[in-house]
Image (cartoon, rainbow, N blue to C red):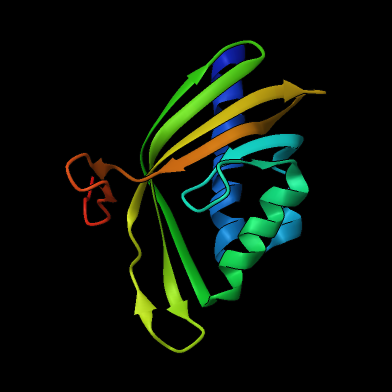
Length: 146
């Protein structure tokens, strides 16, 4: 019989699977159900932060506008689960076919997802995607792979 911690970890992994499914389907309503209403998101593009679920979904809508078809994968995911909070980190890659027909495999970014158990549901309250940068040039390094 699974422990409560194992059950919570399985629920969080299902939420992360729903993110993958929602991105691939460009399903903003499905993604809305995964984020807390007051989510704070640090994405790779400006501004420094997106606050609230509407801002998070607006960001996804802008991304989806570039793509005809979207692919998304998470790799090397590590999860740490407590009673009321949890976090996951790994590598994500967004790719697909752009509206102009160009296929792109995308680039790998570092991703962190912070969850809180709210009304019995694990929701993302903070996420961050980042790209390493070269200190000497001050430019992002987008060709690294896990």
